[in-house]
Image 1 (cartoon, one colour):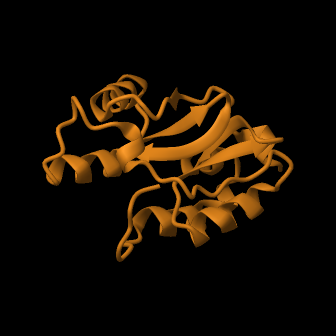
Image 2: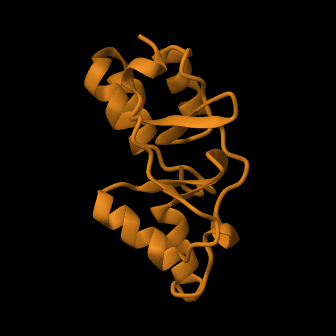
Length: 141
């Protein structure tokens, strides 16, 4: 099965000049744990609920701290033509629960461990390991 068959094509995107308060409100409203940061449909970063929690713990004010100040910029991605197994390998290697799907430098979708678990039960044990691992120095994903 290919990433294209499973990915969510409705990607929730935030601009890097949004505040982390706005980003957290979007995540809460949509019931998701991360947002893709994009400019002109191109991936420029990713922000997770964990990134926001860390910034608040560091006493950065959510109303004025910008997404670009705390987002990850070196974000791994996959292409729609990769197999689910290949995507899971990348997600495990880089400790990611969601991975952007990019084609010709444009965001085409996002693939989450939940999406994979629904369609590929045999990969559940690998995903369970990813979800339950405690990562030293883990910064979200």
